Length: 285
Ligand code: GUN
Image (cartoon, rainbow, N blue to C red; front, side):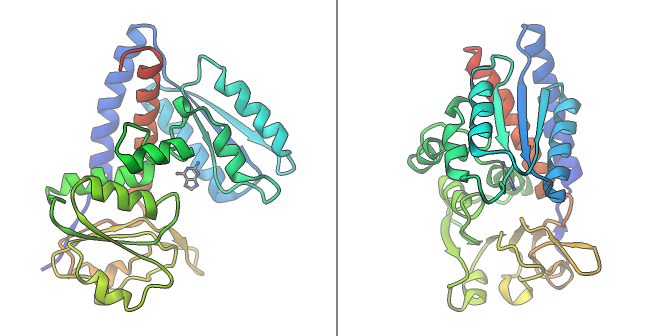
């Protein structure tokens, strides 16, 4: 039997429509959510992501400001911009697109963002709150994955979940969010022995390892929910996920195609966090 292919367009359109209505209502009360997106350097993939984020803001009525800074921007100059944005009442969320040029310390930049505006959920205080289950902005990619899984109708409570990848942006927070949903969670990574055997135990398999078509059918339990966070450019110019979709599609229960689901959901969660930040700033939450 072939897997149900998760329809990203439908889920994203549904959530964004809800956000649009919420933003309209807020604007009616004199509250316009605002997001600042900061891009340093010329990385073409990052430039595409930043444009998509600004366009998505426009779609739901969020005010957005894009700051494109040259590659040679100093750490101090970037920190000064963040300081200005922290104090700007029109800005509720600040996102600095990663990766940053090598001469800038990523940690120093993330630490400088006010936790009230940390819509990426990368600040150490936001991460700490996530670990201990206190309210915080959730990192957008893993939060989007949870929303996608919920919409399959498959319950996570008591299920075996395996996360492949342990990055700070995806793998680690993903494992915490699955735990929060009461799954039994295993994290696999580059040093894991016999990864396929571990992955095959998963009812829910989330793959974020950054290697094209790494996961084939040997990794997949029949009927599992398979979420592919990867996006890799192949030599022929085509995009591929971390999962070998064609090999896995007839064994999984539900599967996300790449591109089209996790990427747009990540941006949608950023919009959601920005609306949330605006409500908190206005004392409506
Ligand atoms: N680079 C890749 N993913 C992300 C993300 O979710 N947020 C930021 N700021 N940079 C990224």
